[in-house]
Image (cartoon, rainbow, N blue to C red; front, top):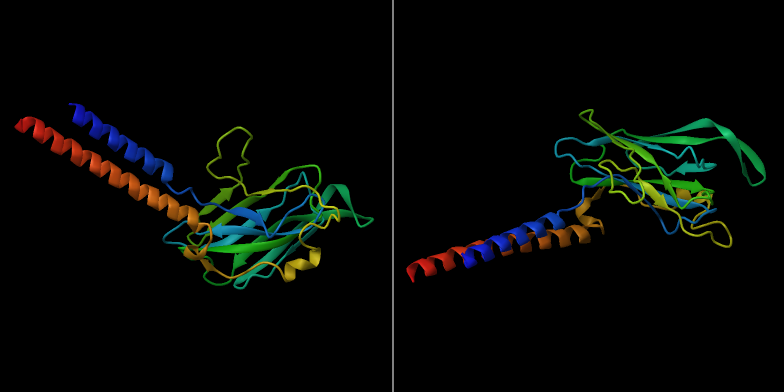
Length: 242
């Protein structure tokens, strides 16, 4: 009985390793190229993975935060994609370089004019943003991902402090402390020269280091579980034979 209990415990431990090592559900994210300092400018990349095996991503819609409007928003051209910029009137005008601005970009939409993001690949969509707000630590961008089979995934849920990440979290840009020159890592003109475009194989992304670790842990959990079962069976047979 003792050997059987040990085997059962080992199997449970192996299953726990598998559960903990399962790769995180991939979703649309946003990261700065360099830093995104409060009060400055930054080029940020919206990373869009294709999570389907039988459909391509053909459109991405990114909605900018209405509570923190950004005066300058410029997309970088992405080969194979058309971009549309939507502006709206502001309830409260912004002041930029001494001039009042009564409208700002509220939405940017990329639409594939080819195959889009095929299964097993991801795409980065760069935007130049500025000036970034100084009265918040982060910006949430609600994104809508559309597939070639007409499926729509809404990455619009904002993670609440102290709570687990929602099923479809909105991309969140973390802002660093303001710099002395208030220009951050990029000026408005940097959008045309910064960032990388083009479809990139997921296997080539640096994030795969985390996925590889998860796979190794997962295999280790399976091995531990199988070994535990085998040990329990052998121990039981020896006890019976004695």
